[in-house]
Length: 79
Image (cartoon, rainbow, N blue to C red; front, side):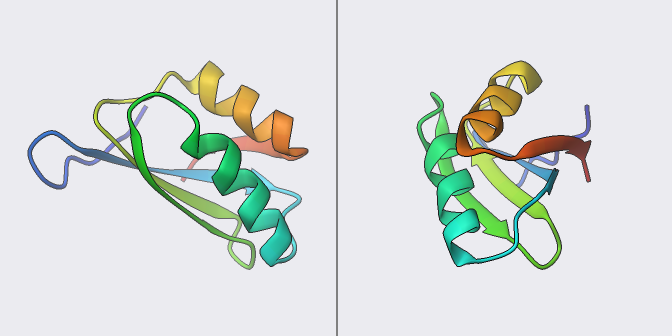
């Protein structure tokens, strides 16, 4: 796993997600990931398929995958 530490106490990770095509898709993915413990910020961009997540600590990929699955999309991996 690759994650970047931006400021003390936060980790920024970029994931690739397939299937997002519009703002509604971005909102669905962002909403599900935002519910994970420790997540402080989520930005999904449908045009690139990238989801940037800022969290207090690195997230378990299985938890991120489950959240994206719940939104109806597929986690491809980390960007």
